Image 1 (cartoon, rainbow, N blue to C red):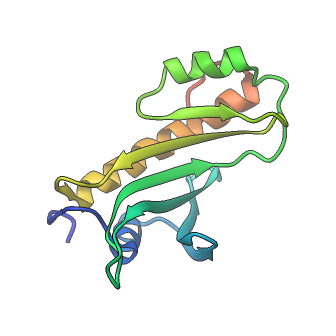
Image 2 (cartoon, rainbow, N blue to C red; image 1 turned 30 degrees about the horizontal axis):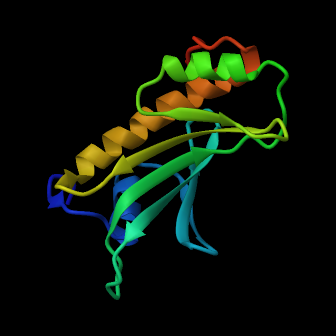
Image 3 (cartoon, rainbow, N blue to C red; image 1 turned 90 degrees about the vertical axis):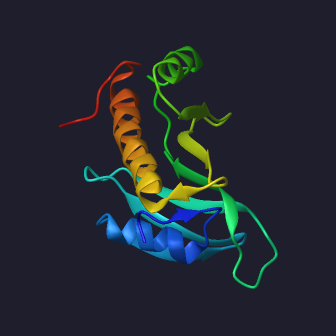
Length: 148
């Protein structure tokens, strides 16, 4: 299952990959379909959902998004510091909303032949950067590294 090549994923396949890598998670249903709520080992919570899905009875999707949510403001997370943080990441972007809240997101394409192992590597990379963003959020240091 993890070495098989996929052109897009179903939600059940995504869930199986997350489960195979040992994540604690909850499958939820939102306005736009199912999503997974999970988190890093140090408690940074985030959601994962699929997009750009076909119209099949069991939709196959070619877009995956993972996103953290920070529901409080941090005076240390300025637009300049956030842009500096973004410049030091790979495959992620952090956003600052008008109300002072922020989030970090990763978008990846799932078309053209991805494997479960590839998806798991992307999720581990997201976990690393979610932890790094949390350290940045706490310190205001755009080069902060995740807690060990």
